[in-house]
Length: 226
Image (cartoon, rainbow, N blue to C red; front, side, top):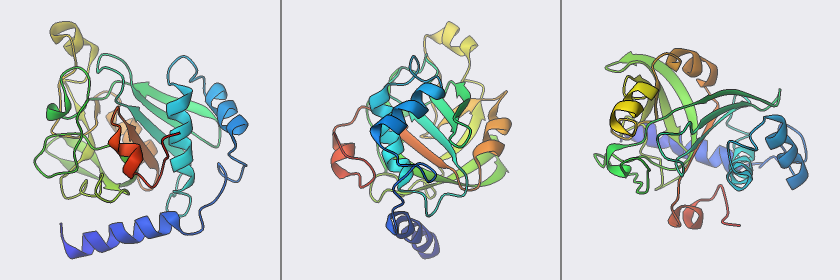
């Protein structure tokens, strides 16, 4: 990773923890408020409240670096055959997208159970990210990500962990192989909605990737294992 990129990521992490706003876009952010948001977004049958609460706890700490109140949560505790990507409009308290998403090849088969921040691991990385600029690359229209958690996902940019579309993220692929295809660590989306989702979340929104990993809450400064 270049020195300039490391400096930018360090600044983002420092800003994320300076001032630490106490609410969801100015609200109290207590348990009742978080549960109300969860219910209004109709997530009660889609995403566990415990995961959502942890996600919102961390989301609040990005107030000083976030430019959009759009929040993407990926729940890698679910198998790849289930829709486990959730894009939420916090201000309007609405679920915008609920779709399939692939995990890294070496993170697991149908379910992701191993995660890494190391280059060439071909694994997904957990934690909080800030979405950055879009570009057109080998996977078409894509979105760069900056990991906000040191030693957990802060190599995301140098590893080229991005959001992109893939034809192996589809119900047809599941019907044929019993699971989604897998990426080299990127959270890959269905091709038919990739551009729409990327345009909605790009340039400064928050992404949280959750997975079953006991070490993550022990080392994350964004959430606590409670």
